[in-house]
Image: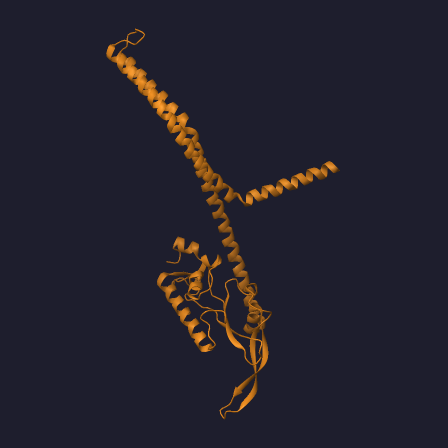
Length: 320
């Protein structure tokens, strides 16, 4: 029984090690390839030093053959004809070639194996990226279908409250009427749930435009004007170039770049509307913030209408 447990434990350990090796295989292949190329270069340099000795030996042999040809006899006193000269020269060249092959073959074989490792690493990563892209497409479609079902059953307002983790709240606000008299009025506003900005509560591409942003002002109209101007600028870039990455829009809005932003974005092709919206929409959704119920400030959640991973479509020119 104890022996079976030990064997089981050893088997599990080897399986874990095997999985880790498989997981890290691209990195391991690249590392092995780079190391192999370096070692191959060193071996080739050493072989070159020895090759000079082979060349010197070959030169001496050929000189002896030509000398024997000129004298008609070898150093041993045997007759030496033109046919013997041709035969010995051929043998000398073949032997020299074999010696060179033996010198450089290890470095060449190692170099080819190293390049093969690097190419294999690229293939593994390419397959994984294709699988990730397929998984993302499936997940994105499922999420959009889910949003559609929520909106159909509960309405757009409830869907936004659930998606952005906000809720409607009634506040009392002091206003001044046309006669200059102050009065309290009730107003329903959307406020975030919880404390502070938590990106995990929103779409992975969503950002919040609030008082911490360098372009934010206490004038709501100026904020909206700024966002709409940037939105129009992004749409113009999309139409001019045919594609636009999310990170480029983040740059316009002074938001930090992300890994996802380097691959997702928009495509513009009026002939193929299935490629996504032919415009950039920031998905601006207004929320109210602040601890003072009478002095809430307006912020915006920006949820961009990216079409997903566009790298393959750009590379294949499918949208042209």
